[in-house]
Length: 67
Image 1 (cartoon, helix red, strand yellow):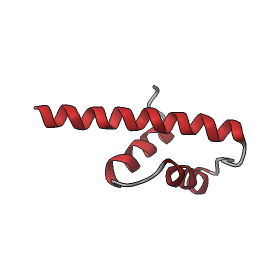
Image 2 (cartoon, one colour):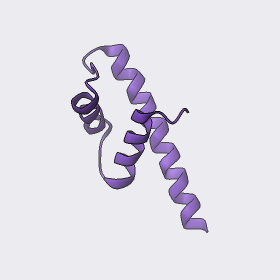
Image 3 (cartoon, helix red, strand yellow):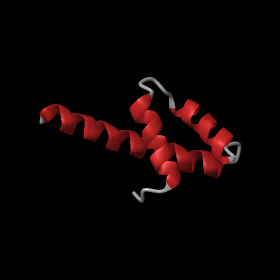
Image 4 (cartoon, helix red, strand yellow):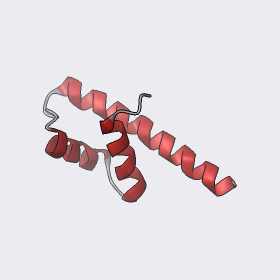
């Protein structure tokens, strides 16, 4: 996945705030990046991106724990 500004922002939220739901992250994106989350296609696209970011961040955590 490309490291765009929004992707870096999402990963930062996942790293720094332990318990954020996907809905919370979507609301933050709507507030700071003016994304039209009410549109279904945008909602599902960013929900998938958040899921991928979460997997990558968790993978990093596991790697750090192993070393």
